[in-house]
Length: 114
Image (cartoon, rainbow, N blue to C red; front, side):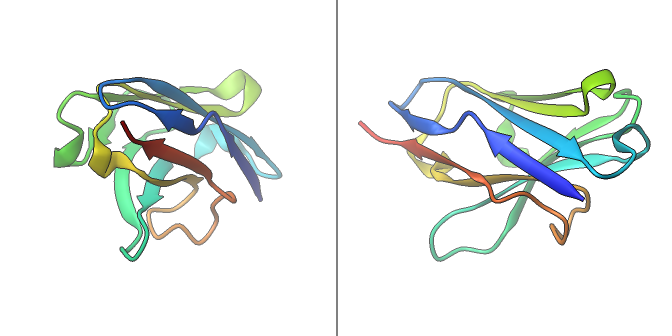
């Protein structure tokens, strides 16, 4: 299992980023996929998950319509569009094959700062 995230960066409050995750080494199109994040000194936190066919999507309450998950099974890609970013969204963002994050990538850093 290999997952590699990209697209993080430094953004001002209210800004946007699009995170990508390239999956390999397993049959991507049969797994529900997850986005997780971990802020410094805090626990790993679930953000969203999307079923294999993309028909069912769930978000954590703190997302409140700001984030959108999507997937491209043909290319084994997972995406997370982050809009209206807040200071408290600063964290390392991971894509994962399980909600516990056992199989997750190295992460991509999102820093929201003015």
